[in-house]
Length: 296
Image (cartoon, rainbow, N blue to C red):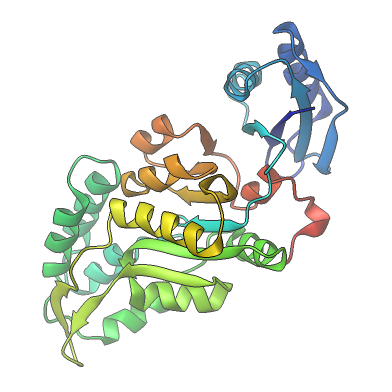
C-alpha cells in the first residue's frame, strides 16, 4: 500500500468500532485497505490504503469520526520517518508563553498577553508586536528570567518526541520567536540538537527593552528549516515541523510533515495535519513509531 492513515487518540479511547467506522468510510469511496496495524493498543492504529489521495482519506476519516477526540494523519508510506524535527517552543514544546510570564514581573502581564494572542493568530505583524512587548520589559531585573524559568514546564510528550527521534538519528531543533535565554535551557533539558531564537539585550543587571536585530520571525523560522536541511543533506520532505502560532505557518507549510499543535484558529485552518486531542507523542505515531519504541 502506498499510503497510510493513522488514527490517534488519548490512551484507551480508540475502540475497534471507531476504526471499523473509518475503514467503512474509506471503502465506500473506493479505497483498498490493508490490515489494521496497532501502534499502541486502544490509542493509535495505522490503516494502509490505496486508491484515494491522502487529503481525501483524511477528510473522509474526519467526517466518519463525527467530532470524536481522534487525530488523523494521512500520508505516503515512503519517507514517513523524518530526519529533522523543527519545533516552536512556547505553547508547543513548553506549556507556557515565556514572554507573557516574564512580562507579569514587569507589571504588564495582561497587556503583553493580549498582544501575544493577536500576534499568534496573525492579526498583527509579529516583529512589530515583539519589539512592542519587549520594550515594556526595560529595566526588569535579570532575576525575573530565573523566576520565569522556574515556572516553565515541558509539554506532555515533548521529552519522548525529542529523545525518540534523536535515538533514531534525527536532528531536533527549536525555532522560537521567544528568546535564546529560554531556548538554550529547554534544549539542554530535553535534548534538542540546536536552538534558534531572539536574543534579549541587557546590561548585566537588567533588560534593556530591546532584542538583537534582525528579529527571529516567521521568515527566519522558514530560513532555519531550509538551512538545516541543506546542512544535513536532506530534502524538505524529510522534516517534520510543529507549532501553534501564525509565525509557524511558513515552516509548517514547507516541511514534509507540517503539524498544527493545539493551534490558534488561523493555523488550524491552514495546516492539513492537526493535533487537537493528543500530546506531542502523536508526532511519533504519525511517523509510524510504535509505543514500545518510545524513548522516555
